[in-house]
Length: 217
Ligand SMILES: Cc1cc2nc3c(=O)[nH]c(=O)nc-3n(C[C@H](O)[C@H](O)[C@H](O)COP(=O)(O)O)c2cc1C
Image 1 (tube, rainbow, N blue to C red):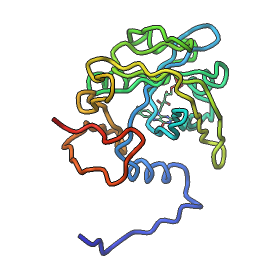
Image 2 (cartoon, rainbow, N blue to C red):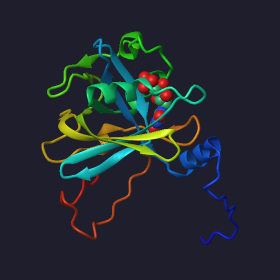
Image 3 (cartoon, protein in one colour):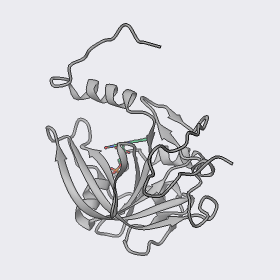
């Protein structure tokens, strides 16, 4: 169906709130990186970030955009820990964990561990100090590759190299990740989340690096 009426909003002079509202409404659904880090005292921090994606395959790399806190302009605990330790873990957030993942976005004081306060069970990582969230079916251990300050200073992109994937045998058969069984949760605009919904299949038109992707059975 051809759209006939559009509002055109110029981007350059937009205030942060309007730009944010437009971006999170238009760039959706977004995967949620549930990021674990440790501070210099060994306290574990967990927080969700949906301005997130994979950005490279050789080696595998992920990128997370972490904003300064609105109002105070303070650096978020996750960003501070990544800068200091140069390590983090991205845990895939699922429908099963949505509630507790959402709660972990609260502004806890820096000396309070979200994982302790919320009773989130952890597993040790292999290559980094930050632990993994036990209930998540996928953990990606990352070493910081680059920090890229963006725009007028509110946002910074943290790019990490995935040095280990941990994949639950509930969702991984040794070759493919069964994304449907994983039940990832996605963030929409405003206070909304979504599950996967209907799945569509079309044969690949170019051969991707990993061959044909997972097909619904
Ligand atoms: C689903 C979800 C996605 C979020 N995505 C982002 C994001 O991409 N970037 C960001 O800076 N904050 C994001 N936030 C807000 C942070 O999680 C929040 O500021 C949190 O308090 C940061 O915790 P920390 O100070 O322990 O790092 C998101 C919150 C939720 C609930």
